[in-house]
Length: 355
Figure 1 (cartoon, rainbow, N blue to C red):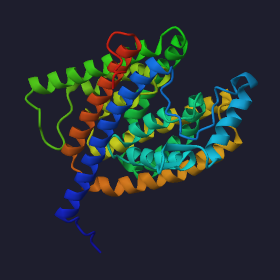
Figure 2: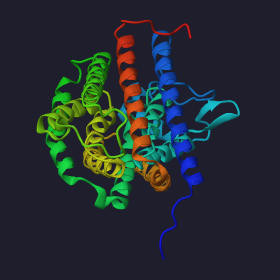
Figure 3: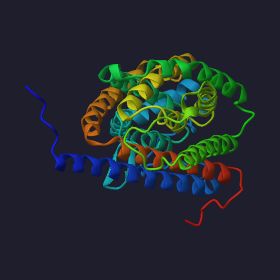
């Protein structure tokens, strides 16, 4: 029986949903940047403390690492640990569940969803618990990547994945050596500046060739498929994932120059499957994940899989051109956010504390 073609109204609705979610992501990025800037200068921390939040890893830090980990798990499972204010709040556990769903949406192709999920996960972690909050989301993220790979295996460009792995590993090793010697603000400036420069370079190439606003499947520029560009992106991406936890935009700017929407989603997930499983091993070796947190992360993984399946359906109705425009908009926002955060952290511009 032939598959029924989606109606024009369904396609319009799907595009509106994706555009709306992307606009919300851009607005949230801006809000997070301002919130980070203002609170770093005044309170010394950018975490939003829940109204009745009595959970703090910083308070129990003198008791040792295991005490901090237990405090974070207590915050995860307790109904008294809430995100939001008053009636507009939810338990931290269900907040993590919701963020995992949005992570799955992003991995499945909805532009901006996974990035904003990661940002909110860090911003709203209990005081002093950000290390465990980041570790908790890694297995769920890997699960979402695997779900995408399973559903889109035939669309993956594996030769591109293996071309990127060596330079990325080199960048991760280099970034590990730079930890401690490069401040967070300087790292954000470096990665944001590099991402911005690459975006401007791609714009200049497209402009010179008269390809701005081309077809749904434009021919890749010559540099996009070159070894040197893969190494530039891989090394910078490896540095970014260690120093700023923001490799996604750099990988996106590379893959979008090579392939259409569906191949992009599949290849990105396949690459991050490799990277995130390495991260899982690293987090286990560091002791940031124990059996209790792995159980929570497994629950998050289920939510992420649901998000992937929902996104897979919605993205059928989004054209390559619309997808490309949304991704480039979000990558530009990511570059600006990194640069602004870096400038604020280094005291080069106002900290917005008046807001």
